[in-house]
Image 1 (spheres, helix red, strand yellow):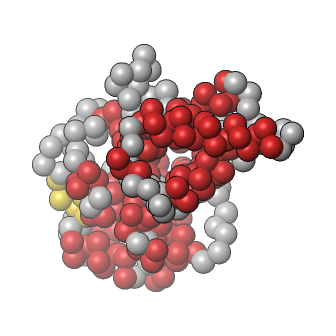
Image 2: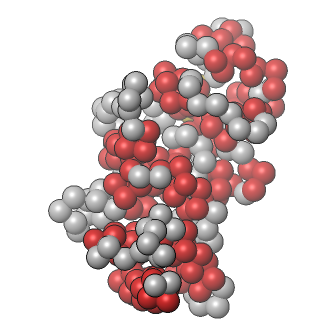
Length: 256
């Protein structure tokens, strides 16, 4: 499967003129992009082919979180060999959003109402909206975030290497929002330790004031605060897991 990225000048032209092209992003095809560049292709071939794969589309009754997670698994499995540096390149993901995966992008967002500024929404969906830094932008682009979720949670030592990825099936958007807002984002060891702890806490039916939905937020908040006085990168995955579990269990006990 050959993928295509946006040429540097093409990326700049599309990104600069998002406001003028807003309505065109509602089109079912991306023919307008070629017309915009007077029939010239704004894309270039990515040098390394990837395994063929199919993205799941949303249908009536689809569970958005589970569909996003399945697509995260598919896209990471196919693109596992690309480097973190390549995966941080806006040209790559913006190219896929505007080209090879235009149909998927249209399906994913056609019935999702925009909350707030439309230009801002298009920038983080189709490009890197770097208003709050490139790292957060990588975790908000529609396709980039799927790859990075797979990258941070994939564990080849488990029977199901994507067991931790599947934790995101429930409350996908909320968990991703917390993840890209966290100081530790981008660190596989910390992310896997955190999710391992949360999955074990759920298995043990640990809650805070009878609610389990707050566990992810509180655990992430704890790691952010703890990371302010300790270098989290020095800890192993299991040490992160133990620290999170100890903290949450202590909170749970005090909330009863």
